[in-house]
Length: 115
Image (cartoon, rainbow, N blue to C red; front, side, top):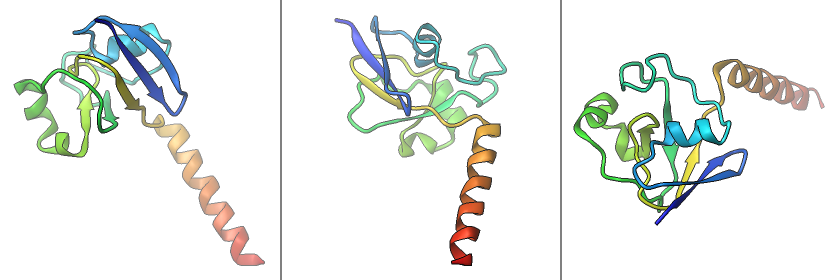
């Protein structure tokens, strides 16, 4: 039975076959996930947060070793995490967008202090 992967914050969903990696699902859905190693669990750039209740295949040894305990925080490597059913995935902002968001939040806070 196919699973539905929903990517947040966009809310975009795609139906995939069981065993599809989250990285492959994201690519098919035109959701950018940064990676440098081509999906070989070597760069750690494709980490995502999986919402509780998501149905993924059990974490493998390679991914578990790479995450060094972060898997308990629902962090997975999208190149290694494989769909078993329905999955909700939080995609982190790319570094430039995250820096802009932090700067805007800081400016808003400073402007609030002026009033």
